[in-house]
Length: 247
Length: 204
Image (cartoon, rainbow over all chains, first blue to last red; front, side, top):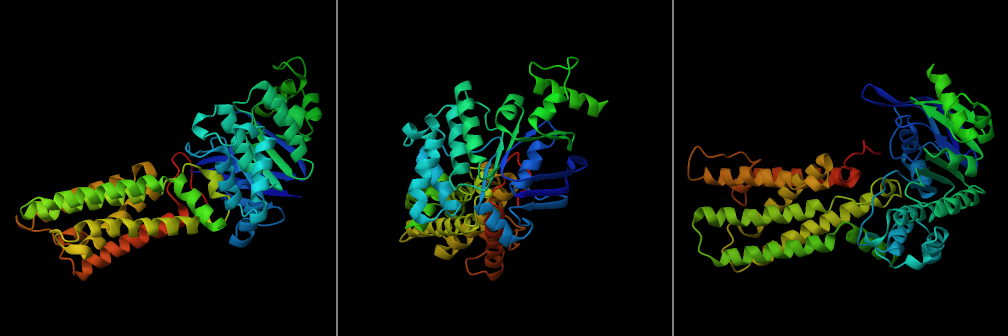
């Protein structure tokens, strides 16, 4: 298992953003669903080693990120795109991705190829030398995805990766996710239930810091019925599970 | 070669070339100011303004535009922060000292070294605590206090604490120790944690 989480908790003052989560994930695309404030981003940030847990167990790629040596190894094999990544507007797309390749210790001989491959995979090949300040929001998002995958990560964490992408790009991105999930663990946090249905083999639904459903997208869809809001079976399942949890 | 490329991209991403240009402008401003015939207040207080401005230039480069993806991207970031910040501080001191060479720079190079290092330390601490965008607040506030301390040299009771090092003589050990300690603290905190990322909770 690339991700092993037991009883993970994160507090901010008196608020429990993540309240005793247990989760395991191997290779494949794993969807993390939930309403605003459910704790998805906090859970993802702990998995990205950007924030330490308050308590509980966390093992990533078979290592404990709590100590320096294993954390360094995890970070070398990790890809992370947060909800609001930052960009230096004067960088070109290639410079931006190259900077992250260098930071992630991609072998020097492979950097040029790895940067080109990552940019091509997000379909920004023709914008390689374009400055980030001139890109649209969706293109910036794709550049962010390129930096996350430039080191061919074994664990890829994406927070709202399809925000700002047009429908065509979202479809292409789902295909990219499925491709990446062939050999890596890809955890995608999103509000967009249809992205999960299309790309994820496993899904967890979070509410108030807890996982209230863990299974397949089909399993989540099966929980819904006509009495709950949603245009698709999985949206109705999502609403049904949340309603049941809160009742 | 790869290391040089990483340092270059890191420096460009933090607007280091712009900071160096701004520091050169500070040095030129100091040089022009030293051409004038100032009374004791001006001779002591004017260089301090340019020293504080140069310190702000250094501290402002602690801010990262890249956020969390950079923080979790690998082990080199603390070394990059340390090397670039130390080099920029040395450049600021060198530029201002060069600007003062041959002019009537009160306190000489030792004063420049102590004042720039100390105020850079304050700026770095502000960057770590408040964010890179507010790194200027500490050196600016300290500048006001230091200018007042210099003023009290002629209007007793004088402020003589070594923590207000610009009001101490250049060879004063207490002032040098205080300025050096603040610089080392600022550099250590920024090396380990970087500038605070506004809106993000503490990172590892």
